[in-house]
Image (cartoon, rainbow, N blue to C red):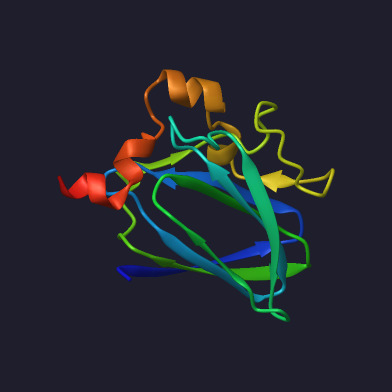
Length: 152
């Protein structure tokens, strides 16, 4: 672990879809320590058999589940209680020049956030679509996300 983060959100606040440049990428271990969130993981690794697909899990302070995100995966969440606090244990420190986002409401992704009314930051609202991020060469390459390949 290189860094620990804490994010506090109000109901219907959507954060993400965030990811870091690879290499080195940034693996994350994410859990909700207060409240409840719908946590979203998106495969952003160009060349992956599951590229562009997403999955979700509810994280809360009752079941205390957690999600591990390997390098190259995108992450976002939506608070589904009045307040929610999410912690991230990260493999690499935050580096603004390596941080990117894909639009959480991109129709190509088709993520169901579970709520019609959302609040989103200006930065996340301005994030490119999956197609635009791919065309611009911003998305990680699947082969570069495989640990053994990074060592050679």
